[in-house]
Image 1 (cartoon, rainbow, N blue to C red):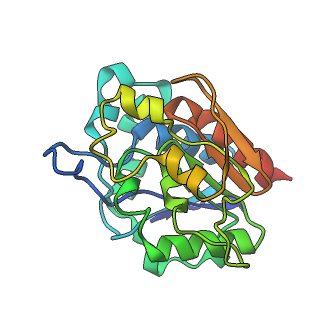
Image 2: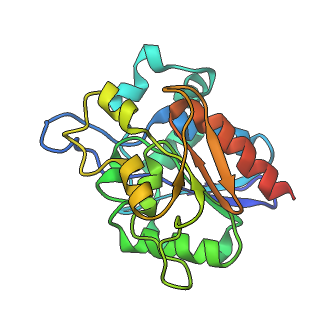
Length: 233
C-alpha cells in the first residue's frame, strides 16, 4: 500500500520475521528506524510504498515500542492511522517492480538477520536498483540484506565500498551475540566492505555513491537526510 503525495517514489522494505532465534522473544523492525526516514521523506512530498518478503502485516520489535525508546517520530507513528494501515497491509516483495521507484530504503531491527539476509527476491531487487543507478539505503541491522547481493560483475556489492552497520560491540551490549545468525559488522568485512563506525549508540552514517548505510537506531535521521539529498540532486 502506498500514499501518493509527489513525484519522487521510494520503496521501504521491512522484515516479515518476528521470532528472535530460539529465545521465544519477539522481534521485527525497529520503529524509530522506520518512522524518522518515513516522515523525513513524506514531509518532502515523497510517495512511499512499503513492502515485506511475505506481504501483509510487518512485525514491530516490541522493545523498540517501549517508552524509553520513544522519539518524536515514534510518537507520531503511533498516532498515525494511515501509516498503521500501511504497516498492516504491506505489498509482497515478489509483486514489486524496481522500475517504479527512485530509491529503496531498508530499516533495521533484528528481523532482517533472519529473512531479508537470505531472501533472493530482496537481493535481486537491491541488485536491480543499484545497477539502474538508484540509491539503496540501509540502517542498523538492515545492511544484513546485503549479505548475498552481488554487482553486475558477480562481486559482492559491498566489496571495496565504504559501509557501516550495527557493530559487534553494540550487539554484545544488547546480549544477542550468541542469538543472532551472524554479526552485521563481521559479514560486511568478510564480503570486502571498507567498514567503519562511530561511537557506540551515537549517530554515524556513510555514503559511497548510491550505497548509504547507517550504524544504529540513532543513525536513522542521518541516513534519511543523505538519501533525501541524493534524491533531490
